[in-house]
Length: 558
Image (cartoon, rainbow, N blue to C red; front, top):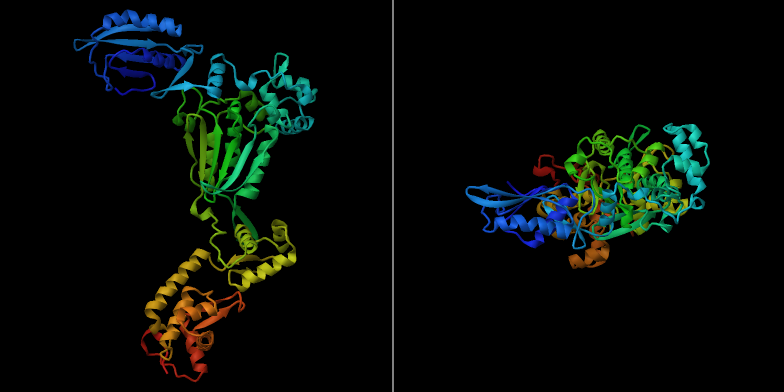
């Protein structure tokens, strides 16, 4: 039998195993078998009968508890079984508190130790009295907002909502004796960080795990944080995949709002605020993480969390006020609601990771909801033009006025940038100026891939695609243009080892032959390879050249 949460094997006794007994006593109890190998096979103890007397005395003197020590025998070999019951109070071993978690022994310190001792006394951190926080510190605006939310939900009698704030807070169980509690401070203070460090939410946008592009912090009452977090994440940090069905605009984010809101509420209700660490929301272009300092309820595993379970909030008083305000239910259905929302919206199920000091949820975007822009646009574009192109990828229906507001520039400047992007062949207008929308001429990565394809094709098959009167140098020029359509005349002259005048003559000839065309201005435009043979033939016929249609590969001949 392998070692587990409640059993461990040791081949011989060592006094340091008192720490293991302490860990069992502080957790759910367990058994320590002395005289067995790691596989649970009995190897025997030469001094089993002496240990039968020594171990109970050492446990009582060091830990102050009584354990049951049994002398057992198997296959003619004696071994000791120490049966440790769970203890209702915290037990220390030489001043250190140990805790059995899974098959490991952990040392409790800091916030984890404080939470453990409170739990052993049947007390929650959010219900502790906080003498420094008085009724004068309770923000009247937050109280008024709570009354509005609670009245709409109808989970509390209206007569209670009409009471003065001291009576209301008493009815909400936010007094402990004569003092307001930690929960009252977090819920109804305009600035809870004045008293509790880390009582806020941090949001950041990451390009990679090491590259943070920008970040924000949401401060204030827990009751007012939730709406501001959700609003900021959707307005600034996540991009919706926007499509149009006729005139109807359809927005689709890779995290459904119901799922995000529920995940954030779970974090606010279950966070260990005594840790002093803020909730962290990390957004990438294709995933989102919510990390929260907290722990699962005692005896729970990840399997318990993902299956149907009763409501066991870490901060029950905070959760109760959230329930009355209509933010959450009280049935332990938070995780179930998150998963159901993702399933309905056709996105992957969230992934939970439980670490010793925190719990993290990860939302992953399906490929059809990912918007990849900015660093994939043409290097010749300015930062403002790239930002404009990014906004159009976010919402093709943006008007000039909306774009000018988002970019904080004039409408005239927006119009000039749009014209340049249009002239450069990056965007085009679909529909009227008033009711239409912008459309990418093609995803930049696809354009690059297509250009590379064309470059390979022209390099290897250029003589099959152009007329026989094109010289070898002109064929090389055509190949260069298909690989790098934005090449300037000096660049082409340098690569071909000819003068700029000669390049200009060749470009004019290829253009007249219908093999290339200029898109955009002479300074900022680019060359495009005309692959349509019909157009090439028409151009040749205009010049009086007879087209022979029976020639292989559909090329023209003089």
